[in-house]
Image (cartoon, rainbow, N blue to C red; front, side, top):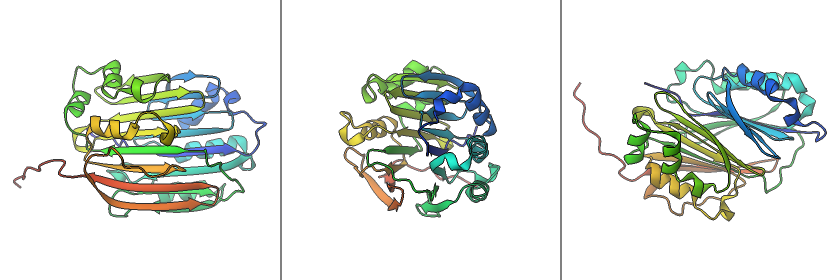
Length: 309
């Protein structure tokens, strides 16, 4: 079985604080999600945020912004266009669109270039590639509007590939459970006091959202042996967090390689397994985001067996 785990991502921040995105209601967001060929499975809310667990990844909505991630063969750019059509281009203070190169890009209904052409029909901005074209790389688009993000606007992404060991065996096994995965990843220690909402897919695959105040995290697991992928995204300030989240997850999941992307978040490899950094770059976006990207490979992760042809 194959499933494209890597996500496409949109973040939109409103220009006018008088509009409240949470007031749009679940039916509105269900319609936006449907435009990406996904559906809402469940949700949790607190005073600040509504977190929707999707059939393909996640949606987080605050009063002034939303973040939506979709995986598989979803058409997130269509959801972006639908949102802009509803609220108007002038309502948007800042927007960014991210997409990673896929394992099997020919199965996708569009490329980043296709998505970019569609989005630029209504909103202008700059596009970038971070990472080597012949290796792991990410595409990003951001608007040109006069917007300045505070330095406290932080996002951290840890994207892990080819997980191995006991954890990987459990995530591919028949006896797994949602609680078992939460325990395996030590999520109560990594994100204490977060309200969580999770879903275990058949025959395997797992998603979880967590919120506490204005903070969020989301983890998505695609454990298929030949294309395994696990992603973490959070706006928790890792520099002030009592637990080294990255080091714990890398130790538990033992990936062969991983990407780290930080927005206004300094690089820190403390606690990483022995590794090589195969590529690293930084990008300062004029709207106030300092973006750091690094691709790492674990030293001697697996012994390859020759195949007779």
